[in-house]
Amino acid sequence: MISRSIIADLENYAKTYNTKDFIESDPIRFPHQYSSKQDIEISSFISSWLAYGNRKAILQTLNLIHQDINLNFSNSPFEYIKQRGFEKYKNNNQSLYRFYKHNDFYNLCNTLHKIYIIENNNSLEDKIGKELQLRDKSIKQDSKNPNPCLNVIEIIIDIFKDVEGIPINTKSACKRLCMMLRWLVRNDNIVDLGIWTILQPQDLIIPLDTHVHKQALLLNLTKSKQANMQTALEITAKLKEVFPEDPTLSDFSLFGFGVNNK
Image 1: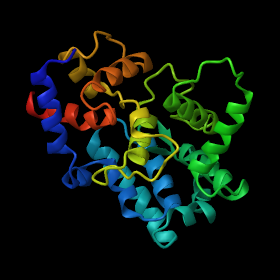
Image 2 (image 1 turned 180 degrees about the vertical axis):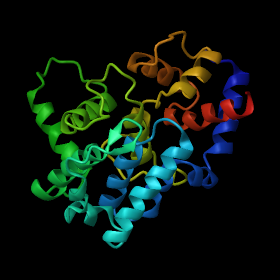
Image 3 (image 1 turned 90 degrees about the vertical axis):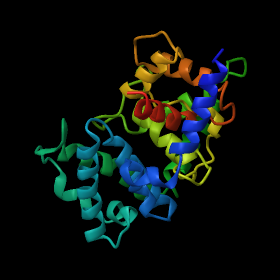
Image 4 (image 1 turned 180 degrees about the horizontal axis):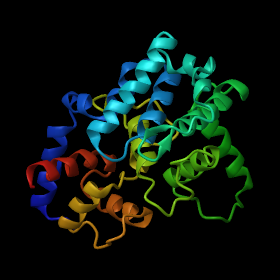
């Protein structure tokens, strides 16, 4: 059990950091620029895909990408994908960001083009929903239902399996995919965008990066030294004691712990 004092701190930090002011210094600020579902999805996928390493460098790179999108296609990432504005990056092995090459960005965009344009899906959420239905039909009736969030993550991994930076399976923490799902599913209309209903907030898994893992260890939410999916699920289960319907709200709480208890 989490102590009452820790629960109070988690609740207070969530209120302090789950605010509009958080948006400007976080990668989520980029999908917040858009209003259409397709634009938000595309910007969210690109922004979360790049969200590792130094925060300042992440924001600088994402700003360059979104400026490129805006310059070419009337402020619409969807039009950028539709009109294949990314074609110029094909086979370009110059560095985009850290170990990502421009050709990796091309592969990501090309997969998005296939989803929206070639397959004519209305949204990435619709594509995932169709794959979920196919998966459900193939599961025997006596099978245990899989974790809903893990099921969605596995489908995303399969769809984007040829893209550098996408996990090969769900043994790793899949931090950036969990973060993107938090953005798209949590629906309190403060920081997160809440445009997907394919999952509910209570289904989400904490995005487990080094910072979150460190805070979770300090708070005895886990004893595991491995920042993998098993640990992420363990921490999420603990945090449901505080936020039973919305465990990833605690992402802001753990951020607050790190800021205030250095």
